[in-house]
Image 1 (tube, rainbow, N blue to C red):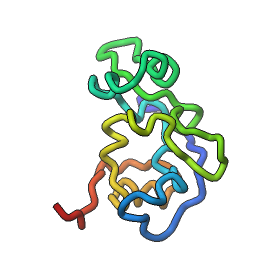
Image 2: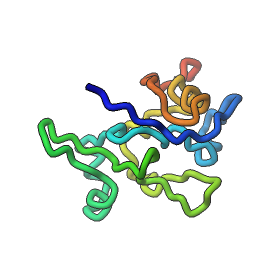
Image 3: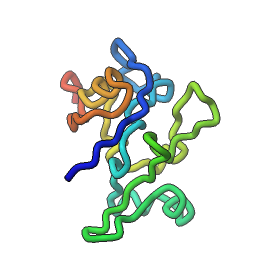
Image 4: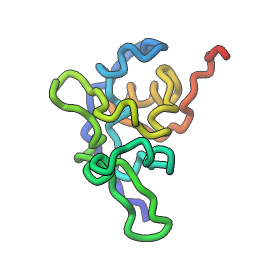
Length: 131
């Protein structure tokens, strides 16, 4: 049975985000989500220090023993909250692959902006992306 988590929503944002991500830190909607949302791959774990792994992640206590970024309530535990109007990632250079894959303006991004938190979309790439 899936447990429902009531998310503390940020206010929705309207309009298109900067396609290069210049306004991502001011948005932060994709960084608000239920626990066990952002999983880490082996390469993600390798980018983090032992202290960061201990402080910012949680390891499932049963198979398949996935590791996830820890949540602080309904937001990512790696968010730097020193400025209440900004949502920078404290581990941006070492952030997990899943976070790296979300493109500004993708369906996932647009849904998070509309809801005030991460939604159910797993479409992380923009459809208008040039190669």
